Image (cartoon, rainbow, N blue to C red; front, top):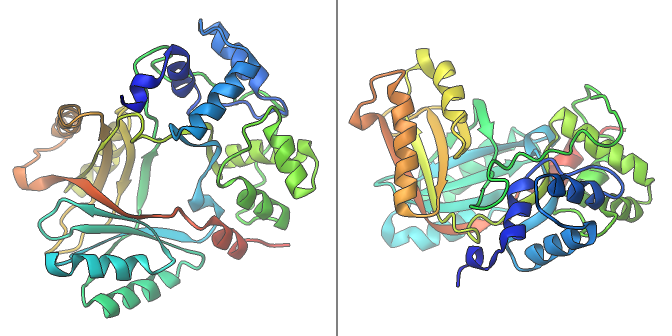
Length: 353
């Protein structure tokens, strides 16, 4: 039996409702449960807490808490592609993965660029050093594809069931805060980022428990996380599903050679498609990589994935004449490494007294 088959109506409502917009108040499960009851999902605060804890323990969620926007914390991350010959693929993967700066690495279907990884560093100037080392060790050229524009990053995975639009939002609750305008972190903020990057405790008072771990006031934690949300340092607060456990196994990275003169129009249009989770402009590499636009889609079956990619192409067709050689879709065939971004190092480098 699949994980999604085990989820009942209430589980599905929770996952749909709270992939963002979870209350940032000292006792958040009370208003969160009340918002669900307003949508016809009968549940108490204690039941909601226990449900989220079980979903987390069972691996249906990767975590519960604040999803940190690493780009706003400090340092830099970039997407890198390379060719790994079949007969040397495993050795090259081992060499690439040995670099602690490599956070994710995937094998993808492509006749040439079949290895795709993310390099995350505290000092943006260190990217070249890491890529030079990988090229020396593997004898293979790397192609750096840093993000030039971000049109969307909103990886929500909705299920059939109650609250199908996933639009419950309690983020207006709690204290009023104002963004500071600072690009750097204070030492206390750095400690908070490191404490919550892996999730919040699934308890009645998660923010107070974080405060206790940091030896600060609970009110300060609540205000700081709310302010991080307003500043973009936190993308959202809520449950973070394991999309594989929810059946979203078809991970399709579509790439497009969008004419530069329509890119700024096409970007927001593709980003508005609800099933597009990531949408960026990245550089081309002449003679090797002609594509400048990336749109990530996820599907629960090959057929659903193909339909969604078709919708992306149909939208593209409204703005330019998309030729057969102007796009491709690269499905991931294997996860080679997935350790997550090292936010502690990036936060440390961006901390000021």
